Image (cartoon, rainbow, N blue to C red; front, side):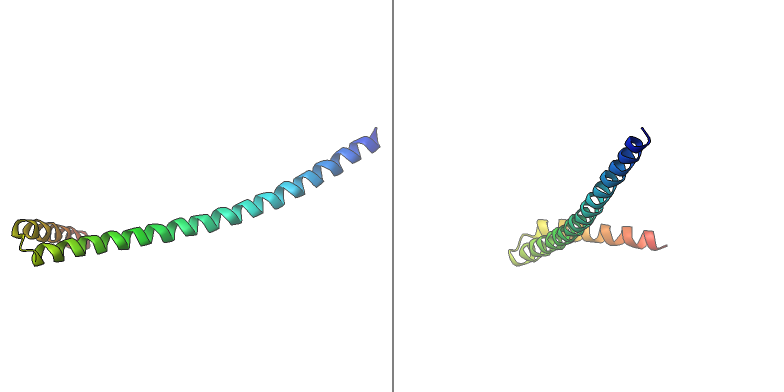
Length: 87
Protein backbone atom coordinates (compact mmCIF):
# COMPACT_ATOMS: atom_id res chain seq x y z
CA UNK A 1 0.00 0.00 0.00
CA UNK A 2 2.80 2.42 0.84
CA UNK A 3 4.46 1.62 -2.50
CA UNK A 4 1.22 2.36 -4.33
CA UNK A 5 0.97 5.74 -2.59
CA UNK A 6 4.58 6.53 -3.55
CA UNK A 7 3.88 5.62 -7.19
CA UNK A 8 0.75 7.76 -7.17
CA UNK A 9 2.71 10.71 -5.76
CA UNK A 10 5.46 10.25 -8.35
CA UNK A 11 2.82 10.07 -11.08
CA UNK A 12 1.18 13.25 -9.80
CA UNK A 13 4.53 15.04 -9.66
CA UNK A 14 5.30 13.92 -13.21
CA UNK A 15 1.93 15.16 -14.45
CA UNK A 16 2.44 18.41 -12.58
CA UNK A 17 5.80 19.00 -14.29
CA UNK A 18 4.31 18.30 -17.73
CA UNK A 19 1.42 20.68 -17.09
CA UNK A 20 3.75 23.30 -15.66
CA UNK A 21 5.90 23.20 -18.80
CA UNK A 22 2.79 23.40 -21.00
CA UNK A 23 1.52 26.36 -18.97
CA UNK A 24 4.83 28.20 -19.41
CA UNK A 25 4.77 27.54 -23.15
CA UNK A 26 1.20 28.80 -23.44
CA UNK A 27 1.97 31.89 -21.34
CA UNK A 28 4.89 32.70 -23.65
CA UNK A 29 2.66 32.26 -26.68
CA UNK A 30 -0.03 34.43 -25.10
CA UNK A 31 2.50 37.19 -24.43
CA UNK A 32 3.74 37.00 -28.03
CA UNK A 33 0.19 37.26 -29.37
CA UNK A 34 -0.59 40.15 -27.04
CA UNK A 35 2.44 42.02 -28.37
CA UNK A 36 1.24 41.37 -31.93
CA UNK A 37 -2.21 42.70 -31.02
CA UNK A 38 -0.68 45.82 -29.46
CA UNK A 39 1.42 46.46 -32.58
CA UNK A 40 -1.64 45.97 -34.79
CA UNK A 41 -3.63 48.43 -32.67
CA UNK A 42 -0.85 51.00 -32.95
CA UNK A 43 -0.75 50.50 -36.71
CA UNK A 44 -4.54 50.88 -36.93
CA UNK A 45 -4.36 54.09 -34.93
CA UNK A 46 -1.62 55.47 -37.17
CA UNK A 47 -3.57 54.53 -40.28
CA UNK A 48 -6.73 56.15 -38.94
CA UNK A 49 -4.78 59.33 -38.30
CA UNK A 50 -3.40 59.17 -41.83
CA UNK A 51 -6.93 58.77 -43.19
CA UNK A 52 -8.10 61.81 -41.23
CA UNK A 53 -5.15 63.84 -42.50
CA UNK A 54 -5.87 62.79 -46.08
CA UNK A 55 -9.54 63.67 -45.71
CA UNK A 56 -8.60 67.11 -44.40
CA UNK A 57 -6.11 67.64 -47.21
CA UNK A 58 -8.64 66.53 -49.80
CA UNK A 59 -11.29 68.80 -48.30
CA UNK A 60 -8.97 71.78 -48.80
CA UNK A 61 -7.73 70.69 -52.21
CA UNK A 62 -11.17 69.86 -53.54
CA UNK A 63 -12.67 73.17 -52.56
CA UNK A 64 -15.25 71.53 -50.27
CA UNK A 65 -15.30 74.37 -47.77
CA UNK A 66 -18.09 72.96 -45.63
CA UNK A 67 -16.24 69.67 -45.06
CA UNK A 68 -13.03 71.56 -44.36
CA UNK A 69 -14.78 73.75 -41.79
CA UNK A 70 -16.22 70.68 -40.06
CA UNK A 71 -12.82 69.02 -39.86
CA UNK A 72 -11.17 72.17 -38.57
CA UNK A 73 -13.90 72.59 -35.95
CA UNK A 74 -13.41 68.98 -34.88
CA UNK A 75 -9.64 69.46 -34.62
CA UNK A 76 -10.09 72.64 -32.59
CA UNK A 77 -12.50 70.80 -30.29
CA UNK A 78 -9.93 68.01 -29.79
CA UNK A 79 -7.21 70.56 -29.07
CA UNK A 80 -9.47 72.31 -26.53
CA UNK A 81 -10.12 68.99 -24.79
CA UNK A 82 -6.39 68.28 -24.62
CA UNK A 83 -5.68 71.71 -23.22
CA UNK A 84 -8.41 71.28 -20.61
CA UNK A 85 -6.86 67.99 -19.54
CA UNK A 86 -3.46 69.67 -19.11
CA UNK A 87 -4.84 72.24 -16.70
